[in-house]
Amino acid sequence: MKVLIVEDDIKLAQALGRILEESDYTVDMVHDGTTGRDWAVVGNYDAIILDVMMPGMDGYEVVREIRHANIDTPVLMLTARGSVSDKIAGLDHGADDYMTKPFSPAELMAHLRALMRRQGSVIFETVDAGDVSLKLDSHELVRNGKTIHLSKTEFALAKMLMSNKERILPKEMIIEKIWGIESNAADNNVEAYVSFLRKKLRYLESNARIETIRKIGYKLAE
Image (cartoon, rainbow, N blue to C red; front, top):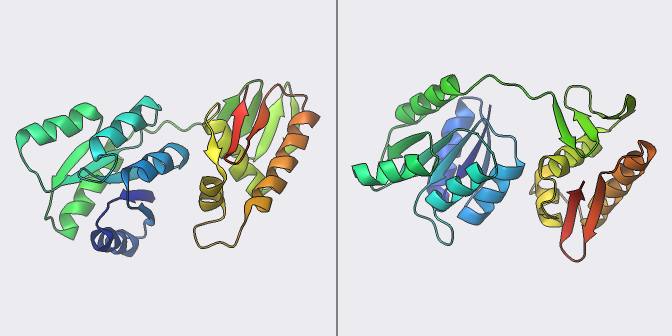
């Protein structure tokens, strides 16, 4: 299970991460609402733990934008404010559950397990963009019965672009999500794999194309 923690209190975020990792969860953590929104939209998470009070974009705004992007990942909101009106606001914006700080590790895990049980079991086998499909089980691009296999990194990049078609993805975000925050990967790594994917889309004669947004990143256009 993979969980995204969005919490501006770094010590609390790290404590939450340790609790989850001790239960064999994989954890990503970010510390502001804008980055949390971006990671939630492009990531593939089983749950999101989201603080309400954050600088810039607060938790209510984050969950609203996640839902507007058609991301149905369960969201557990955390806040120091426990009034009924605050809880209603979180749920009305699209959160699935609400916890008031402070809480025990056991309570946190119980809420997460309940969210997982309520989550639907729909499994998407493909991601589509234009006239091409990405098969998630076999790592293949398919168009009109014509198929080409992708490497692990090509697949990760294709999935990220196709899941966010018509949305500009900065190079920095691509590097963090595919190679990892601690990676030494640079812009030329992204450029190389974008080139590989473009060649494979041309081979399939697809109308989907990867556009370069100068000095920013890339987007997949249909």
